[in-house]
Amino acid sequence: MHACIDAYLQTAVSRPGTPMEEDDTSCGIILYCDEDPFDDDSTPIPPPAASYGDVDDVQQLVDLAMEYKARERCYAPMGSAAYIHRLLHDHHQHGGVSSARTKAVHYIIYAFSRLGLAAATVINAVNYLDRFLSINCHLSWEVWMVELVSVACLSIACKLDEVTIPSLHDLQMEEAMSHSFRASTIRDMELTLLKALQWRLACVTPYSYLDLLPFSTTAAVKRSRCIRFLLRSLSEPSFLRFDASVVAAAALRCVAVLQDHAYLITPPLRQLGDESDECFKMMKSLETSLDHHHHYHHKYSAADQLQGSPISVIAFEGSDRDSTVNSRSAISRRLFGTPTTLDHE
Image 1: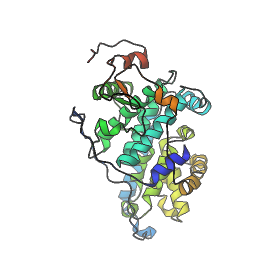
Image 2: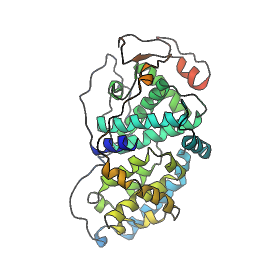
Image 3: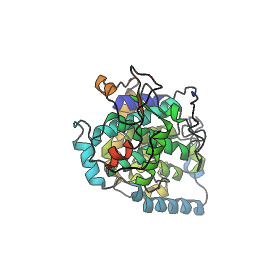
Image 4: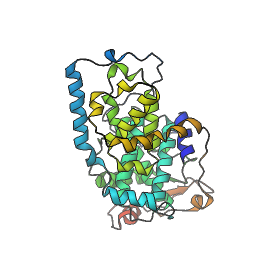
């Protein structure tokens, strides 16, 4: 898992889109745009005196940090303690929520590299995933269920953060998935997901706190390294024990200490408290894996490849991609045990 994530974070490879018969992005709404988080500008870092504006600027950032802290727990997984316990102790259980999360995060991180997505998109998608899984952690998660929810989480996140929204066809990468879903099926899952999350999508994540860096130094620091810490931490369920602000502070402290830029831990970030020490040690332990893992090719097992689903799914291996099983209502039945009024296609 670690090597897989680290290899994906090394490079971002894009591929041309393949048009679908049905336009699956026409209804997408771009709520806001995100700039490229990977800035490898080699400009020397300015001295501390040049890194900040006036006192009012500092106070505004402090106020923003406090606003984020006041909201961040509203976007934490439901029943966090019980959910985290399941993730940490049920990882050997077939079909359990722990294995489901692992597979989903694999896919989301792979899509980040393959499609050149913004870091905010990936981190938001994993936030949606954790919140949804925490609500449904009692389920037995089959491969097709994990893949459908993963695509829906990433699709919704793309609509919020990406300037160019990938098509649903492009999100379903054959090398990373065992099944392919109709656009209508994914949209149904998106709606199910949105209702479960109560349409609260503008979440506060560790990435949100990167804006608290002084603007004049943002391009100069190794911002990409901090983001790599945050992305790498997504695969570790133990980081869910901490608030988003604590995880962000830990990543920023790692970058500051590693590069001898302690002054980057600015007043707004110091407001986050001392509880980040434990998280900082955990984050620091990721440094070795970030530097030494370069190549990993994730493959699903043969058993995973053969598992089918009762909804509008196409198995990639040994099947006709034009044939599907029409049973859209199975989404709600399988995930929530409730009937739905959706008609079959």
